[in-house]
Image (tube, rainbow, N blue to C red; front, side):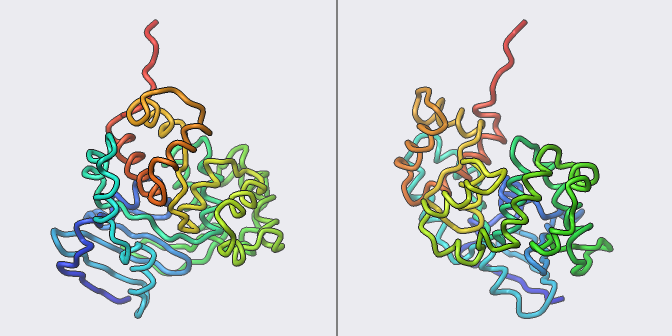
Length: 293
C-alpha cells in the first residue's frame, strides 16, 4: 500500500468522494466508518477521504497515483465548466449542491455490464449485484479494514457465469439472458472494446444499441462514463421530468428532451446531466406525486 496527501490543490473545491461515488455513475465502492470511501477500479483499489482542503489517499500499490488521478478526472477544470453552465435555470442551484462531482473514467466492460443491470433497477440492488459478481467471478485483489476486495470479472471470467446463477444467486432478474449474450459478444470480439473508443460518438452509440440489454439511456451512460463522450445526455424518467418542468417548461418525449438538452448544453451536456440528476434526486425535484384517492 502507499499513502498520499493532496493539500490545497486547485481542484479540491470541486472534489468530493461522497458526491462522485453516490451520484449514480459507479457501483463498486464502500463508505467506511471514518467517512472515507474505498473503491475498486480494474485490479486496483483506493481509499479516499476529504478533510477540509486536504485529500488523503491510500492506494493498493505504489506508483498508482497518476492512474487514480486520471480515474477521478482531476485534470479537468470543473470550476470552469460550472461557470459556463450555471446561467441556465436550475443549474446554479444544482452545481452548488453537487460541486464536488467529477465524472469517473471507468472500465468499458464493467460499465456496459453494470448499466445493463441498472435498467429499471435501484442503486442498492445494483450495488449488491456488482459486489456479488465481483466476489464470485472476479479476483481477490486485497483487503481493507479486514474486508476482502474483488475486481469486477473481465469478459473471460464473466463467461463462467450461467444464466441460472445470474438470476438465482446474483439476483439480476430478467437481465440474466441479455448479460450472458452481451458477455459472449464482447468475449468473441464481435463488439471490440479496444476499437470502440476510436469510433465517433454516433457510430459507437449504434454499436452499443446493438448489444442485448442496451437501450438509449444505457448507451448514453456507457458513452459518458466509459468513453468520456461529454456531449451526451442520458435521459431516464427522473431527468425527463426535471427537464420538462424546470428547464424547458413544456412536455416532450424522451427523444425530444434528449435532443433539446444536447442542443442546450452542447459539449458539456454530460456534466450538466450529472449535476441535475444528483440535485434533483436529493431534493425530490421532478418526483411524480401520487394522485389522491
